Amino acid sequence: MIKDAFAERAAEWDQPSKIDMTTRFINELKLNINVQASWKALELGAGTGLAGLQLLPEINSLVAEDTSVAMLNVLRSKLTGNEQVTIVEGEIFEYKQNDIDLLFSVMAFHHLPSLETALAHIAGLIKPGGYVVVGDLMPEDGSFHHFDPIPHTGFHPEELKTKFEAVGFGVNKYYVYNTLTRERIPGKLSDYDQFILVAQKPL
Ligand SMILES: C[S@@+](CC[C@H](N)C(=O)[O-])C[C@H]1O[C@@H](n2cnc3c(N)ncnc32)[C@H](O)[C@@H]1O
Image (tube, rainbow, N blue to C red; front, top):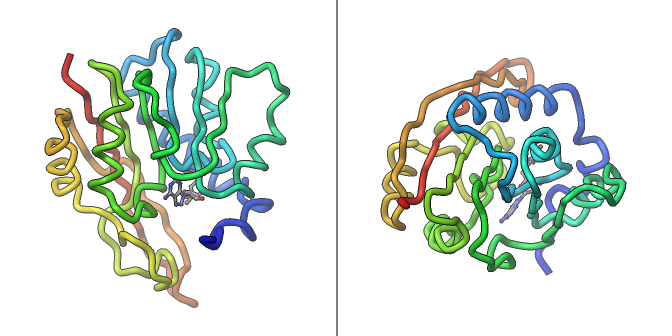
């Protein structure tokens, strides 16, 4: 069984810095696309729901997908049962319906082991005209994750754009929208830029 790298962090995840980070992402997403009340959205790497639960009042329903049961259990603890939220434990491949108007993801794409395979699957989930909005790190030196091995130390958005285009999306735009300042190396503050990328499936 694969170790849940977020198991020990889940209970302490909802810190002001994370709330601020996810709020900035959702605000940026809304600047770029006209979110509709009828939409079904899917959040890849939803974690404790910090981003998705902010968007939920503006859409019809949310699928919250994540590989960490511990993170999802924190999300579950926030739900009353009346929300239109479906939780998917596991990789994105566990979700198989072609009914998503908007897939979004903040700070989770760099954890995807095979980006090309995931994108090919995602292309099958999005309805014609639907969107994928990704917020993640620009290329970094590995210090953001304390030099632990992870699949991607950030992304060159132009390369990510090419990968989206390879599975049939148009990429409307990408740009840096936020900078995280963190002390990942003791005694040294480092800046980590975050980009947003907006992709759309043709009608
Ligand atoms: C940095 S956290 C971000 C969580 C949330 N998006 C937020 O901003 O608060 C990364 C999340 O991605 C999840 N994750 C890691 N690998 C994943 C994968 N292959 N598929 C889906 N989620 C994954 C982790 O369990 C974790 O919840």
